[in-house]
Amino acid sequence: MIALLSVAVLGSSAYAWGALNGVTGGLSGSDVIGSGLNSPDGATDVLLVGNDSRTDADGNPLPEEVLKELRTTDDEGGDLTDTMILVRIPNGGQRASAVSFPRDTMVELGNGYGEQKLNSALGRAKSEARHRLEQDGVTDPKQLELQSKAEGQKFLIKTIEELSGASIDHYAEVNLLGFYDVTKAVGGVEVCLNEAVDDSAHSGAVFPAGRQTVEGADALAFVRQRYGLPNYDLDRVVRQQVFMSGLANKILSAGTLGNPVRLGELIGALQKSVVVDSGWDIMEFAQQMQGIAGGDIDFHTIPVELVGPSGREDVQADEDEVHRFVANLLLSPQERAVRQQAERSPEAQPETSESSSPAEVSVDVYNASGITGLAAGVANHLAAQGFGTGSTGNAASASSSSVRVAAGEQDAGEQVAAALGGIPVRTSGSVPAGTVEVYLGADYDGPGAVNFAGAKALRLDGLRLAQEPEQPITAGGVPCVN
Image 1 (cartoon, helix red, strand yellow):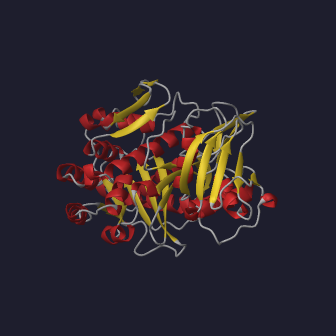
Image 2 (cartoon, rainbow, N blue to C red; image 1 turned 90 degrees about the vertical axis):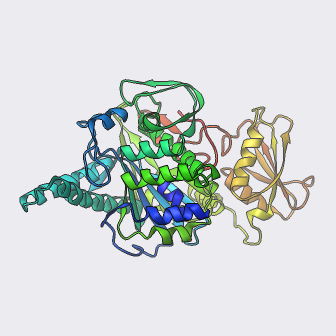
Image 3 (cartoon, rainbow, N blue to C red; image 1 turned 135 degrees about the horizontal axis):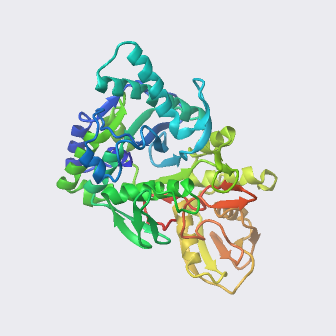
């Protein structure tokens, strides 16, 4: 999925561009959207889906020996969409945001299905369509598979559109074999685990703690594990995000796009196992998106609540809240931080001026918390948000955090404070004009405070609230996760 997007976005070398021109003719197409943009909503929206189907892109069943290599069987799974990611690329194409939809999110499905898990939408509609086709006299197994699956894909697209408020323009789907082959083609992806895991009874994930490179069946196990993780499927979503950010970074490097053998293997994997909507002109898309680099893709998760007794919670999402969240992804990181702060406490939002941009603000960060590396983490976060990079260092211990500015430069301080979660701003005669100083006290727990970039959870009397990551995952680093 991200492999396809990455090759389209970064087919910058002459060889890569020529190879991309060849791959577009070899991808399987599904008539699920039609031609042209679905809605002029300010972005190109691409739905990326990972399907646990035991067939290839052309509807052919996978051989038993392949299933064994994938550490799965032909009688488990089916057409559950275990990975659903909406990629929003604002008009102009200089950055992209990818938002995950947890597979177990309970949604009200149309067609009389009632409230069901989101990952069952495609399979339910496909099963119903297959039954109709059989009644109409269609008997060829391959045609039954392809035609019924197209109906399932259309229904999933409609379901995600209703939940997100976005109008999906393009669709790409990869199955287990495709994921396996893509990770092998690029030579594996580097990941990092906070602790060692052993899920040999379920996903087959058995990994030590720390940084390591995974590919093939191990990569599948890494992104499929949920048993034994503190936050179950929400931690699996984070696993998928960090893996895909690493995959995008790997593909966007010269080591893949500049290597004819690697690129050839990658394109072969895509042609064999990726389905895209038949109206998608990937060459045109590539030309539009060439400005995006690895660090310009960030990953998020829709806001959800886990409600119910521990171990048997339902994943619930408020549709209005999801609509606001997805709409905010079209904003710049700075605009998003200000809006999120306003939504949390609108009465406390100061009036901001349009006279200064983040790039014009130089920020010095001082660690007064005693936590090793905190200043560097926060400085990196601010740099990623577009602020000018100043100096970092240690300061005398302080219990509370603050942002300090020279007289008359409150606006610049408020921009920095918003990017850090809304810490207090005050004027100081010792701060040079044109500079913002951040002092991180013992109370600081905002962006850059932790190595774990995934959704954190609060548990209160059986309720867990999955919050937006403190620092978005981007395709430029290797954060350690559960």
